[in-house]
Length: 238
Image (spheres, rainbow, N blue to C red):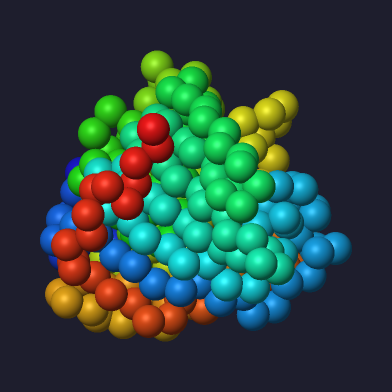
């Protein structure tokens, strides 16, 4: 056995190198209120304009259901805005203004928000959507690190590097790399303050840093509920 293999074997004692050891298979649905804390538009703009816009909503009601269903509801003044993703379909609805825009994201996987954006890993993510390659175990935190990419057939070669808590099974840190050019780092996400709700560990604080490692925004997840049996009709996009 080579020295490198010996060292690797020592580091990996008790640790699996397979992503399926770290997902939360018990998560069926979840809901919570996302409340923006800090929001520096100057620093958020360095990530991208669309990302900065998302921090203009003080509160967002979040509902998600496996597999690949997400509903976000916010208010701007007296107008409700619904943003719904169901599989590859996305709907933007502003009822008071009569706006109802649909989009198919089959060829734009990076636009499909999922539980992954909230620091969670579930089996559906790695069923012909994403794939994870083990990188190493972090020496300081003892957390396994994976590079997560979209399936090649989806035509998006952006990359996420994630650190996963091996016991509570949520993402503690995520680095987001662009698919353009030399694939620069776009942002760093840190998921903190996990709470165990109905058998599932949910991070309740999100910190977002831009590529200069400057804290650009924070979000608190409040009133977290898990596996309450959310109806699929909430996620209709027709």
